[in-house]
Amino acid sequence: MTRQSGCGQCRSGEPLPFAFTMAFHPIVDLATGGVWGYEALVRGTEGQGAGFILGQVNDDNRYRFDQACRTKAIELAGGLFPAGDVRLSINFLPNAVYEPAACIRATLEAARRIGFSHQRIMFEFTENERMTDVAHVQRIITDYRQRGFLTALDDFGAGYAGLGLLARFQPDLIKLDMELIRGIADSPARRAIVSGVIGIARALGIAVIAEGIETADELAALREAGITLFQGYLFARPAVAALPELNLPEMRRAA
Image (cartoon, rainbow, N blue to C red; front, side, top):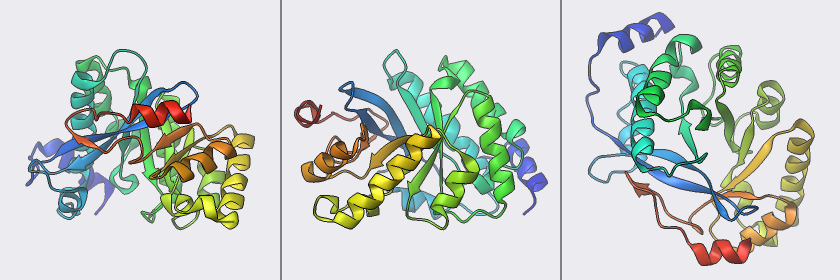
């Protein structure tokens, strides 16, 4: 499918053949003891997981789905998020953006309509989705950063070319994949790798989020390494169309 045909998808106004909503999962900042932001995660309207929805995305609806996800996340965040600078993190499909300036219009319009500052929005792209045109993805990220959006490389360390993408894209943040984190308290190798990644990120002015945190031991090892931004079931589970209750005792102990 060409990018021009993707443009036609968005202009057609044809609805998606399936319904979906968003769940929200917090990213906590243990340096402040509060919520840094929430990641919007696609879910079915009857409680189905992300796989159920993503399994229905194809070349005929990919562009419309990407646009609809952004709008849905912003609309829900506008009604749920507290006032202030709590960020909204949206996953996007790099291969579903045919032209950065054109494809961002609906996002900007939704943010303006809801009264949600676009500077509170972070776009996550994953290295697990092999990119068909790396130069095109770089143009997307450059355009988004110039407009004031944050960008993050998700699942860092689990995909095709982590360090290569990091060197090329220079996102604002990276999210360490849970494969690097699981069992880190008892793994000198994982601790050494994570320490090296943190050092590289600091040298490049890139913040680090550790995702998939499930145990106090994992958290302690990563805190010792110098990370302050965390996401995982230890703090909360995603809540559909709502903000989840936080594990405040664990946050206070960690902070």
